[in-house]
Image 1 (cartoon, rainbow, N blue to C red):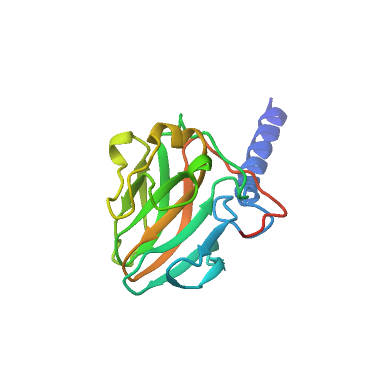
Image 2: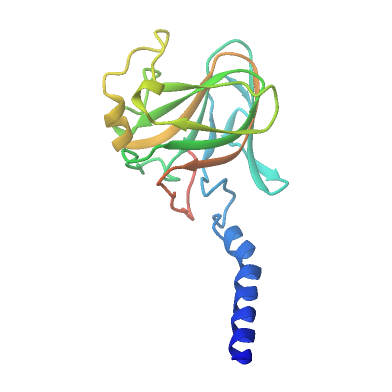
Length: 199
């Protein structure tokens, strides 16, 4: 019996020691935040950087950093499947956790594959954090999502957008300093794509 107890204690210690390594290996081989590899400046609106990946090394991995300049619409994109042509069925998802800093309010649009282009999308407000790092949950309940008259009314239902979600698109019309360090969608784990490119 003592030998059995010793063996069990040793096995438990091995599991506990390996846990952090296992958690770290959940990220993709290329830069990613919670396995999301594509955080992109679209070139719409004056931003720094102007185009391309927003991912930069951070204390515990990577952060997506971008600055919105001027009073105009700015657009940054996260591809949910890590490539443009991928899509995800989020109809059973409760919502997503976002860890971020923002010096002003902005919005996030849920863009479906069949209605990708244009500003006439379902969106929800992402409140300013005053520059502090916070984690907030954003529900996929339909009454939490709306549209802006300035951008146009969507010609499709929010429920249908959830079934073919291609990306989360962050938009804002005011100067803003933004950093994203976490994105976790309930019930969805993005695939790592080794040759994911920008578009």
